[in-house]
Length: 575
Ligand SMILES: Nc1ncnc2c1ncn2[C@@H]1O[C@H](COP(=O)(O)OP(=O)(O)OP(=O)(O)O)[C@@H](O)[C@H]1O
Image (tube, rainbow, N blue to C red; front, side, top):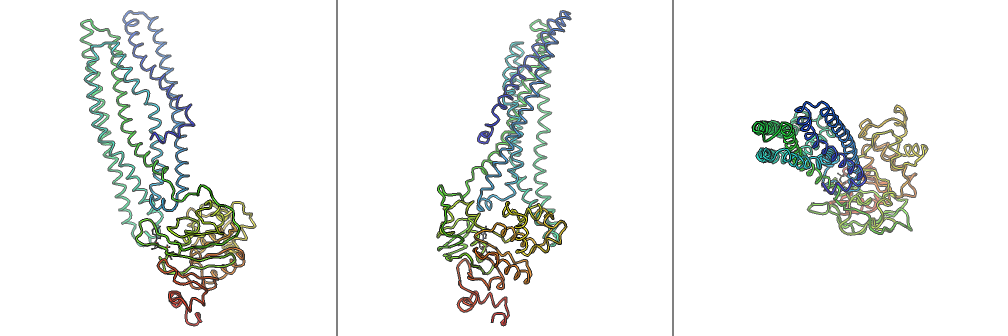
């Protein structure tokens, strides 16, 4: 957790403020019983009203000062902890943003969400507690013992018995509670995972009538978390009465033995009243320490999880010296590229070599799982190659900055993703500086203008979260418009026409061709109709290039291509 506290630097003054106010408040708390003792001995017992008024006034002043200090300490500690939480959330978010897809694959979204929300909340809560109790608990315990000794040394023997008993109760209870608290985080992760799957897959769950089964899965995760909390609360429920019992027995013993000492003249009434209060302060400070012992390990578990996120070094980073000047424009070249996913038994791609030039359309076709998406994901460096090189405009993608690399690319992923916001916002996502005219033009080329104009508000129509209020084909066209408005050197379209009808697909490709005369276009497709006009078709089979050429060349030379074609087109269409 200390590692995370380096982010407290901007709040140093506030932390010092909290410590000072807590120190003053504790001093006041320790002084009050001594004043009360004086009131009893010098005022009440002597019948001296002036003394009572004078000492009573002082007590009010000390108590008032303590209350003001407590308010300031509370305000500053909350502000500091909230500030720390804000910094941590933004650090975690920006680190996660820099992750390559490998790190995402490894961690998973559910735990990243829990770490950014619940875990950071834990740190926030415990930070307030630590700042408030770190000084006051030990000071109250030690100061209380010293003050109690000053009132009556012999009676302190009661505390010599009571404190170890209380410590045993606390240690026993905390040792059972700490592991349960640690488990809470893991169980929250699990519930988030189930919840995420349920919410994103709600349509499939309904369609397959598996609502009841999924409810059971959720209920299991929920019950698991609930049972854990119940166990924690059961121990908590036992803890408070047990502590109160020890504290009350201590009070009783102090009064009992104190009474005996008063009756034989070894102690006065004021000292006994003050001693009782110091005994309670000491016990209370031990409870505070116990709370810290319970809460800190819980936050420590959260801190470890946050540190893992912050310390995970993205596999894909910029080279120390990047080469960002180019003589050519729009050339994408694969040179003997081989790539395997982490943990995979065999490479997803082997010995891939080809050159895609500006003004040309390069299409990639192959059966499912043949490696088409993997191949194009290597171009924007979502993953790095195992061997071989990928050059853009003559420079290895690993040698240029990722920002420059990605600014050259207009990427349309296989699953079109839209964000909540207007249609214009979604298209401008590709280029924030695009004018309304450019947005409109991109929509026209992507064959989206017509359905947009039929929508309420046209380009201002609001896309719902996850793009649920537009069809699959409409989503694809908006994703294409988003890439077009970027005016990139290289277009990468991953199966981006799959949800379009044949007529729209053909119209879109014709419009795209006119628009991209100087750009390099790489299209992944399943349909032969989409790729047959391409300047170069790459046929992938189990991660290798089975053939490369134009449609007519491949019909003559590539068996895999012929098979794909004959499974999709009739004899007349092939001829
Ligand atoms: N993130 C990943 N981690 C591990 N293996 C993966 C990952 N993504 C894909 N693969 C594997 O790599 C191989 C190639 O997958 P890829 O998605 O590139 O195929 P594809 O040709 O695009 O398929 P489709 O046409 O179905 O989209 C498959 O065997 C797949 O299981």
